[in-house]
Amino acid sequence: MTAATAPPRRPRVRPLSLAILFVGTTYLGYLSGFPYGLGVFVAAGAVVLAAVLRRSRSGAGAAYAPAPVLAVLAIEAASAPVGFGTELIAGLAALGFLVWLADDPARPAGGPLRELPTIAVPTLALGIAWTSGLLLPTGALPLGYAGGLLALALAAVAYLVIRPAVFDREEA
Image 1 (cartoon, rainbow, N blue to C red):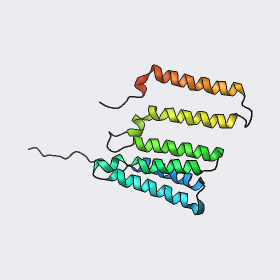
Image 2 (tube, rainbow, N blue to C red; image 1 turned 180 degrees about the vertical axis):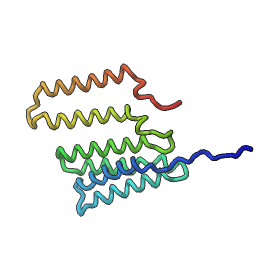
Image 3 (cartoon, rainbow, N blue to C red; image 1 turned 135 degrees about the horizontal axis):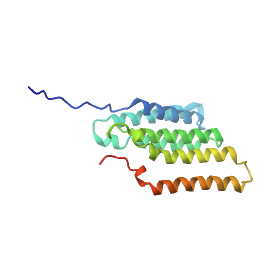
Image 4 (tube, rainbow, N blue to C red; image 1 turned 180 degrees about the horizontal axis):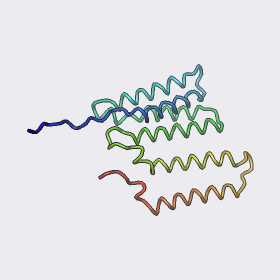
């Protein structure tokens, strides 16, 4: 007696990565220069549209899911006032976007954890930019700080070139 069991259905929308994307993008929309708080509504609409496209039954809609969020992130980052906090939030929103991309339901489970080495490179770049924004005084650029940050970046790139398997954790 054998019973045919259907494979477990994976959810089409994973709420944790979607929440990270929503919070980062809408907060950047709040900080952007849109009048009357319109940036929050534009950002929220883009994230909802991306979730609906990713949830679509056809694969054609899911392929275009990142486009609205990417467009809104670019518009908000371009219109946001220049400042240390705004730039940090823009970087964190972009990292949230990368986490959401890695957590694609069409791929095997554990997307963000499997893609952690790949997401670590932009995270390292954001950390270097954030650290240089904190340590380097505005105006004059001390050569010692810049050289140290450059040496750290080159060491990270050298490590990643030596071990290319760090990037390729996708199952065949």
